[in-house]
Image: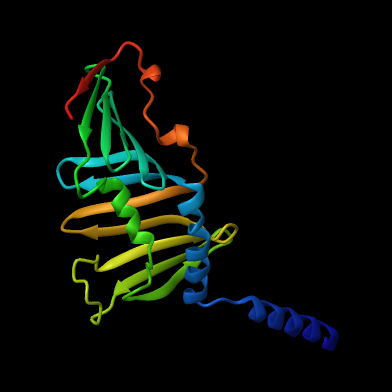
Length: 206
C-alpha cells in the first residue's frame, strides 16, 4: 500500500510540474502562430449570416498576399489579392476581373487579427480539455478600451502542436469561425496565374 501511495504521489507531482495556466498555453500558441508571418498559413473561415446562412472560404495567407476560394450554389469564386491588386475568378461566367485593391485590404485576411494578442483585454478561462485540445472562453474585460472587440471569443488549442484548432466570435448577429489551421503556404498558392485559366475572359478594370 505504501509503495502504491508513493508511486501515486510521484505521478501527481510530475503532472503538476507539467501543468500550464491558460495564459501560458495561449502565450505558447502566440509563439507558434508567429510562424504564419514567415511560412504563411491556410485555414477555413466560416461566416454565418442570419437568413443568408453559412459561407465557407478556404484561405491561403502569405505576407500581404491572400487567396480565398468559396463555392455558392455550384458557383466557385476565387479571389487573389496582394493589397495593391485584386483578381477575382467567377466560374459561372468563366471570367477573371482585375481591380485595384480597396485601401482597407482584404476583409477575410483582416479577420486573422483575432489571433493577434487574443488575450489582450480579455479574461481567459479554461472551460474543459481532452486528450487532443484545451477549450478556452475569452470574455472581454470592462477595461478593454476597444469596444468594437467581440464580447467573447471561443478558442480551442491543440495539445500536440499548440496551434489554434478553431477560433469563434460573434458580433452584430454575424458569427465567424476560423478552423483547420495549417502552417506553410507557397507563392504559387497565393499568386494569380492566367495560364491556369486559358479559356477565361480577362476583364482588366484598373
